[in-house]
Image 1 (cartoon, rainbow, N blue to C red):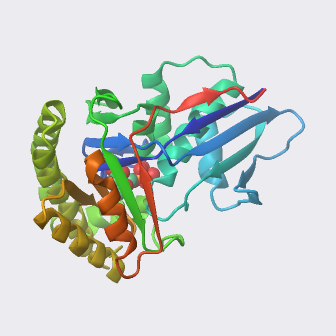
Image 2 (cartoon, rainbow, N blue to C red):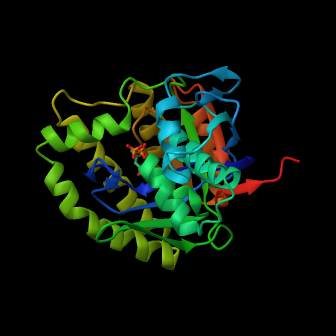
Length: 320
Ligand code: DP6
């Protein structure tokens, strides 16, 4: 009746932004991501007949704000007529700050919940269940390079490349560790309802996915860099043009982008991507990680830099 799982966050290179079915949390577009190695969330789920209500403890503190979403995730995985649960979560990086903490948290919760209830689901099913809680979480059920495809009535996941066959590094520049004001779920709906660029964003996504997939299969860093930066800036343009505008960047976000442009000019193999928050993720070849980390550390407004390789899929761990 108790199980623990670990999941790593993933960073989308071709972004999921927009839902085609809010009720079932189905994305409006496919996406491609890389799962990280150094950042993680560990979640334990204990089902108990002694509990009247679910309980959630995040990094040693009781959390009421995330509890409804966690309870819904447990209902999805185990069924609504389940025992109540004590859920304990711990992450080694800032949460709700645009660092994909919901991806690792819901991927780990899904795997731990299935384990606690003794349900032996296939990875693909676990990914779909995690995706109902948070779209990006589905991708953390796989390691390395992952594609999430929009199918007729569901999502399909494919591992495009494993961790070792193209060991890229990701340098994360944290410019503001506090939680963001607007969550991505709400901001996506605002984009769909008000942004004049939303429809073209959706229309162009297949083309970006095709280009990125081909670049990953060929290990074409320059090709991947161009399409990933373009896709990221398009997503933020959709947000900026919504009403009210949704601007997640701060001045340090811009400074980081300038630092990376300078490094690119000097021949460094690096590109940026930014999610629904002000942090900048610099993806680079392993030989360039040190110089990228140093340059971002020295960039005005950067509070912390974390470097990670590519990591494995979410998995159950034995805590006994
Ligand atoms: C910008 O997965 O957090 O990081 O499904 O509403 O929980 P919900 O959204 P979420 O959105 C992630 C958005 C993104 C891009 C991405 O990871 O693909």
